[in-house]
Length: 194
Length: 194
Image (cartoon, rainbow over all chains, first blue to last red; front, side):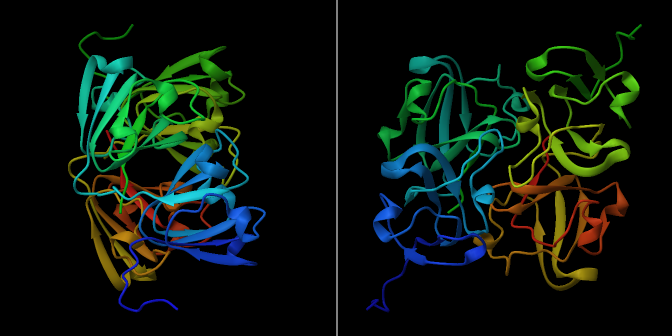
């Protein structure tokens, strides 16, 4: 029985059919594999509070996508961009360090924190429009909060969720951006809202 | 011959093949139908400066999508979200009033500027996380700058570009959001960067 004095900072409800139909389950902490709860996959979801990251496969592997508060009636709504087609979400967890007001990170032109650098504490739908030198980021350090980085401008393409309290906030080269990352191409970056 | 003293605030280069191959053409103002320039459609593009809006069909009809500075190597990169599949871009124009610093709009719960309202001058990847009452917006007024509104949180789904200097900045009900708009569902809104 739920303790009525507990405040849930993170709550997500997942459904195994589109449009919030079928079997459903509420989570307030991470889920390593939704199949253990009798789901084949998640096909719609509601984020009631907090910010979450979802993963295509179990154990937080494969494509990742940020999930902020609101309603996502089918995979296409939460799977991101049609630059790649996501048909499933199998694991997910809260982004505990997300903090819209206190977000800072540094991006570097090259691997291992070399080359030109840029300090970010806002949203950049086009890094190049704000003065960044090209269409790639070689390495990053997240000092506080959490950001999501995207392949293309306008928050499109593969998503890489970067958190200050994972990986020590240090991402030395593009393969550390995410297990699905194939190139250092990043053209937009924004803060994650909590 | 280009006048070397002219400053181009808006420049886009469109290609009829993916990955910046094939026939290409540079534009510094609107293009009502790219087929008049010998293109079947646009399959990749580079925005060199300014912010643009692209449309699926000629004469600025059909699905619309915001294009900020950077590189878009295929339709999937600029077409938006896989909630709908865009295979072509046929017309496009600069968003002249885009101004990242001076952007203000008011959203209303119901049509005709009725019901609860919210004043926006920032980016909202989740309207509900910032206190909005539901997953819809009934009507809007844009006082300055330009915004893009999205069906789903995290800047996903159908896009509606809202400008202060078109439509008098007044959008009384959802069918005025865009010719492709079928419902008043809007869950994220952000400023357009110039």
